[in-house]
Length: 228
Image (cartoon, rainbow, N blue to C red; front, side, top):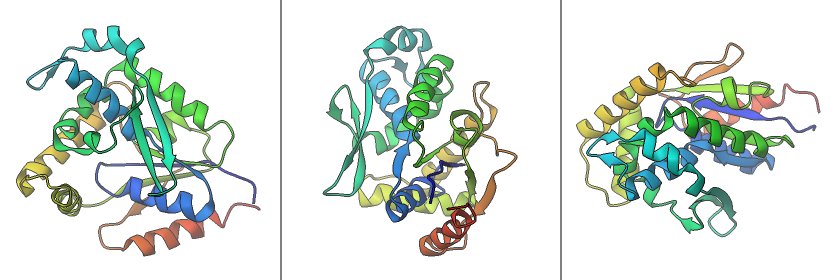
C-alpha cells in the first residue's frame, strides 16, 4: 500500500499518543509525538527561570530559542519514543504535572510554534508518518490523507490522566487533574496562534466508552479505505 500521512488531533488525555503509537507499530509507520516537543521547550523555560510562579516571560523564551534543540528518537528496547532536550533524555520529566500545568502557555507563543511546526513538517515529507497533537490536521499536515479528531468526556480523560500519574508515583488529586485539563482545553481552543480546531475533513473518534483495541480496529478500517 502506498504510504499516507495520518494526523491525530484532539483534547489532552483522550488517548491520542496511545492510538498513534499502536497504529504506527501495527502498520510500520513513524510515530511523531508533537506534544512532547512543546513539553521539552516548556521544561527548558522552567529550568531557566522564565516562569514567575505561573507567569511566562515570553520575551526571554523567544530570545533563547536558538539554544533549544529538541530531538525525538525511537527506543527499540522499550518500543517507545524518547524526547531529548539538548541531548538529554527528558522523556520522564516532561510528563510530570509541573510541565503539564505550564505547557499550554508555551504552546501559544508564535515563535515557538513556528519553529516546532517547521521541524514537524520536515519529519512528514517522506509520508508514512503518524503524528498527534493539537494542530496537526489543520496546520502541520493539512494535506494528510487521514485526519482524526479525538475526544472523550472530561471525567474519563481526568481518570486516565490520574491513573498515569499515580503509576509514576506522582501524588495528585482527581480535582487537580480535571481542573488542569479544563484549563488546558480553554487555552488550546482560544489561543490566537493555531488554536485547537477540528479539520473539516477529519473523522471524529469519541473513545469515552470504547477500548483501545476497539478504537485501533476502527481506525485500521478507515486506513483500509485508501487505495493500495
